[in-house]
Amino acid sequence: MLGLAVLVVLATGCAKKELILEGQRFDVRTPLSEAIPDANLAEGEQTAALDEQINRAIKINLPRPTNLNAWTHRNGGADHFSGNLALGNDLTRMWSANIGAGNSRKYRITSDPIVAGGRIYTLDAQSRVMAHSPIGAAIWVRELVPASDRAEEATGGGLAYEDGVIYATTGFGEVSALNAADGNVIWTQKLDAPVVAPPTVSKGTVFVVSRDNRAWALKASNGRIDWQQQSTRADAGLIGGAAPAVSGRMVILPFSSGELVAAMANNGLRAWSVAVSGSRRGQARSNIGDISSDPVITRNRVYAANQSGRVTAVALSDGERIWTANEGSYSPVWPVDNSVFLVSDAAQLVRLDARNGEVIWAVDLPAYRKDKTRRDSFAHFGPVLAGGRVLVASSDGVMRGFDPVSGDLVSSIDIPSGAASQPVIVDGVLYVLSQNGQLHAYR
Image 1 (spheres, helix red, strand yellow):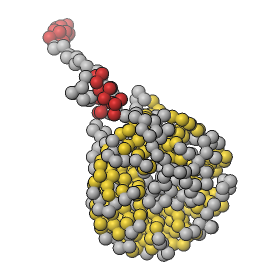
Image 2: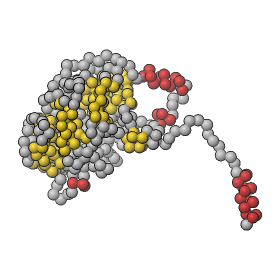
Image 3: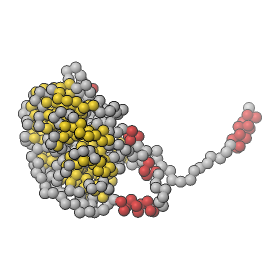
Image 4: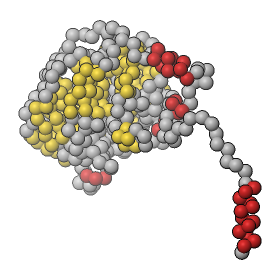
């Protein structure tokens, strides 16, 4: 026994010393862009180059504020473009109202509020639609869970409005038309896959994209199928997703495959298609190519982004690519004048030059509850340009306002329980949903 112990000691003494590599240590969750600096630059030069690239205070010519009297789709309308909205400076929370189920580990609120006809319409995390009055009183409730299913079996979906009718999609794979006055179901169309992104309705046609990468055009009057478009298969997508955008005779269809398709709204004939592709290095989520940012149409351009690190601008007429920037976005971008504002996948509010996609400035938003461990990331919703400032609502419980010229923080407002939707602004009132299933109104 003693001899064995001596042999072990001798063997240990003969073992090679562990080689301790030189250099800075990085956590496994550190973004690759931070862990691998540009080898052609010294450390000080890297910081200088970054400072030179961003945070330039360049003048912007904001259009006159517009007072919207309805918010019928995400970002305001069917083209997802709203410009500069009218909103006061010193906002105060007027009231809060319950809308149903909030966020949890299994369920998510994926629909912004819709405002039309003096009412606010919401969809909770478990397929319940509610209508509230301008003072927060509940008017009606409609459950959209099929009789053969249970509410906890699906999540996702969204709302849109046209001509006194609310159109709703759900994770159960159904599109429903509801009478906006009383919530009664006018028709329901069952599709072959979940529809977790909001619908878009324009001139009597409802456009939706289902999770099996099919686009559908339905008659708004009875729900009958007009036409379908099929994209290539995608291995994964996001809860929520992007809604189609409509301008004139053209509908822009975003797919989880990364394909962006322009089709004729009346018959589905393809006009062009482009791929929104590319990603940040070193991110596991980069394998998901889902177009997460609703297409935005303005000035004969279409803006769209994926969540893995790319935003692109293409010509509406023929799909010619104008530029692509190395930023991703979960929400629709907000173009105005010669700038494009977005909340990036790297938790930054970014202002791009609309002419070439170059970064004008970028400011950090809170990323994690605990920066050291990089767990429990915050969600950011927006941006929305209103009252001369760029607003971002966040799940950390704060809605921040930024100077559109410089990116400086100029205001902050508390959101109880943290934001779960993009801000919606109608008649000078701002509405936002919180994670615990509450609708908040600010003026």
